[in-house]
Image: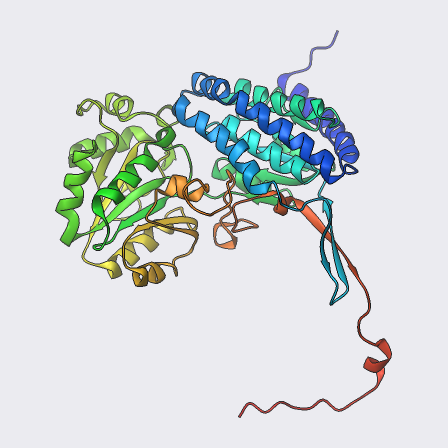
Length: 466
């Protein structure tokens, strides 16, 4: 009996899932709004019931983050998402413009591929499965190998919940033997209509390179600016709550803090009072040397880890209970390693003279791997907010933690775990992705003007600009 190698098995598995998923989606495409609502409710209820179990499984498997915070993310990806999309029209006639005699009809895109990161393996599956089915699409999940068990279990729960409510089997599936060969095969399968890519920059770039529609997420590298008019205790508290959430594994989390000299001492005292540790220059160098590998890629062993774990790895001593490690930086780029994205409990710290210099530092940081994503500002001055609204990002988060703000927990943004970075960040959308991004819109347009009248040659009146 022939024994095929792992890559061949994984490729065959991807092909089988694509075929089965496409068949299931073609059935789901004919479901009505009531049927879809029943299925979505079942998926949400199952996700809610297993939120804690999935969170604990993800932490145990990957070592990233905190189970309590991952539980919250699982609920945000299901129950809170449902509240937002419940009344969203994604089936049948979604608009009827009687005046212009134009009817808009929602059509599903087909079978989707969802690339899922190891940092948020279960919440991302829940979120992508729900928005896919809400828009009558099927989805095949491509898991990160280090989070295979929890990702597969989340996908199985979502599929079983959908089937229990009447959906065809295999509407949500997951690659069982993940490999780059399987991922590449699935991305290129004719059955796949769209790729939703959440993960590392290389994987997102690969998704865009296969020649079919894709929705991807660029790196965050989010700067947080504390302006002189800010409520400093509140600003510091929000930043800490955001950066420590799941130990910094969400791409919208703050990566650097920028403060003005006139409030620097007060900000530093407040960070220290609330449990953060400012490292010496030597300690900062030691931490940075352990934090990154192969240039500016994060060391996977320190992603989503506590300050204690990071300090031990770097061989430095920090106070017990430290929440965040903070390192001062005086430039952006090669000579300032903490100016890059750090999906863990470490922040870079910059001091500037005024808001104009803060603008310059912010722009430099965004151009260092965060263009298009998000920017956080703490201020009581609306004019300053509008000055910074010109920055090349699509989420400007005011007086809130950027993690909670970016994913729609503490702001009015759509609850989402795929945050588009627009064309500036190499993404096809600048939005938080919702089911509305996963439908095609068919238009029925009645004639409202006489065709014959346009065939008559009449002089065009020139409009004066005076």
